[in-house]
Amino acid sequence: MITFEEAYQTALNAVRPMGTEMIPLTEACGRILAQEIVADMAMPPFNRAMVDGFACRRCDLDQTLMITETIAAGYFSQKTVGAGECVQIMTGAPVPDGADCVFMVEHSEQIDDTHVKFINQTTNDNIAALGEDVQPEDLMINPGHMIRPQDIAVLASMGYPDVPVSQRPRVGVIATGDELVEPSVTPTTAQIRNSNAYALCAQVDAAGCISHYEGVARDNEASLREIIGAALERNDVVLLSGGVSMGKFDLVPGILKEYGIDILYDRVAVQPGKPTTFGLSDQAFCWGLPGNPVATFTIFELVVKAFLYRMMGHDYTSPTIRMPLAEDISRRNSGRTAWIPVSTTPNGELARVAYHGSAHINAMSYAEGLIPFPEGHTELSKGTLVNVRLIR
Image (cartoon, rainbow, N blue to C red; front, top):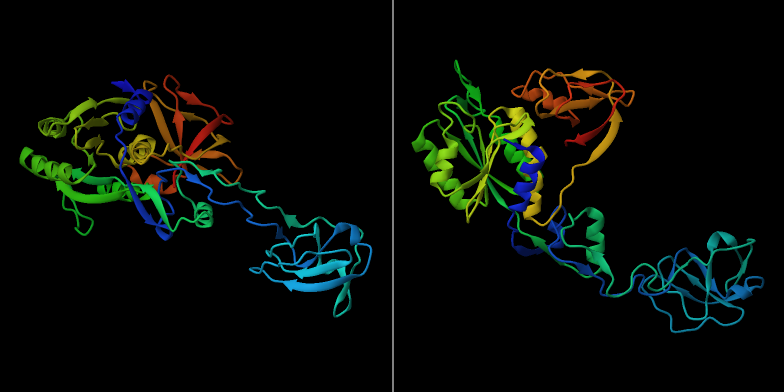
């Protein structure tokens, strides 16, 4: 059995990056940028008026000014503002040569149709200077960045109607077990509905990858060989839920080895999730996750998600906040790092979610995050500040 930290690093070190593809800008939000974005022009591309008002020479603010023209956004004046002159200008329009300030309409008095006077005490320049935000060849966004809505604006402003992004891993999801039936079926005695595969598919999709539900493999070698073999052929990563523990019918590790999967580890010192298995071949990666749904969910959040993002060139870091505990939390066994589901209280503290073990999946619907219970510790006292790994 290896430590969680060793398991995490071993998996990320084994990553083979995905290829790249070009996609429309309108489809790029949430994808991982595959190359650096460099500015092709200055921003602003000209001295830009920041307010509606009048552009003039600052030294002429104390006199009545003659309005020589009106400049709207999108129009570039060929004239130069001279002594005693001004131009009426709209927000976003290029400031003409000769003018070094723009005073607001609210700070003006219209004398007649062609003359105006500045009536405030002072004014800012109200001009965004050419290139003050961005210079040509400036690095705008680094590769590996997850594209957000604000990045779409940057990409559009730099002339990227199509965006180079990492391809998304195809992830096959298999549930194992004779006891499993689909959600549409009413379970009979000793049966349960298959929840793990559907939750894993949702987690895969939320991580920006492409999930493929491969079905339920029964607890016999023929069924496992058929479904695992097909999944390995058509996916970059295969996630299996169940069948990797020490029971008589836990046949998955042996089947994986038959398909050329080199298993790098099969036991991790983490709770829940001890029987986590990770391996790879030249064609695919494979994760064997515990059968209990909380363990499956948690191991995906803790390590599989970061692994999938690393395949796309993104170094994923879970959103984390630091908060105090609202109550004492204790446990009997301190041999592994445990992850405890928690929610926030109205007082801004953390309370443990009612949780009966790794089969208690509905507890996760009330959880806002997970906190680590360090190895070797049996007690976390009320008021202790802990790092909360947010789950969304």
